[in-house]
Image (cartoon, rainbow, N blue to C red):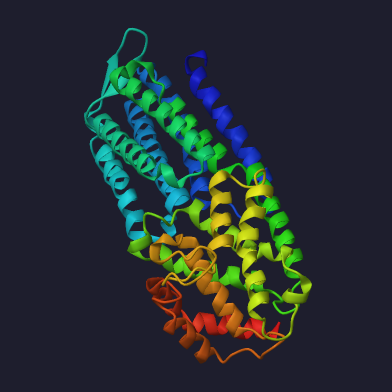
Length: 429
């Protein structure tokens, strides 16, 4: 058994991590791709170990068993790399919204499995200085597929690294680089048999950077704390009710539409979407500095009062910069800051506080602006009744190009039926 101590060590690590993962994720949804990786990766290591034994004891093992073990090794190794590529793409870009890319990622693996299985009879077993190893058509196919997937993953990470948080960016690049070095060494020196180490590093890298339940729970608790603070601020304004919850719903709806639009393909990463969604409840946090006499006034504000009210954008940005440093990553904090400060900017440059225009207004602030105004006009306020839904849609549509980003308005209004349903439900609450 000492001959396979590397594989056994890797298998123990994967199984232990898998047990921790399963135990800690009982109370919230798991990632199906990571679950699939959790299934195939240990089997890849198991058959790597068994193939090591069969190829070195061919006098005791029937040939069909040896070939069968190698087929299963190739299948699970290729499956591990293909699922890893899919999982990483999902975590950075949300593959569920790009089914064609999903199948494109899986296609090379499927072809490689078919070719490796068909050519298994041509595999040769070579006696090295310390151990025997396999070479031949199926092995070359497996190497080529692994190399293709690795290059795909590496290029994707390098192209998308700026959309990851700095903490994840360093971690992902580090473990992907380490895996690359291991695979290069394995291809150049086939006798060393360290492929299981690459599988283990990939699995642990994914776990630590994306799927660690403890980190996910901490992120949920942090967001709950932020939401509670935002709700406390909102409770001072008797006219808004569930404004922050509703605007977040509208923001999420628009973000979903943007994911399906090629114009935003490079921007709509999972981290960005989550950051914008989590920043939405903080857009009016600056109102904590607004006097009650203005915030709760039942009638129209005077010019002087409106100038004071407008300061909530600047104050909100300052509060986020000053108080959310330990709760948010720098990227998340910057998005929250820009949402709070710029959600009243207008596309024609006539908004406040800085008079930004067009795409100089951060994208997330343009998204927030539409959600904020739509909720304001579609819900009852202490000084007026809720406007009819058709009138609300008309106001948003007329604001395209002047108040709002015209392309975002177009996407937003594509879901009129869903928006109408959401508004009806919100009015009944």
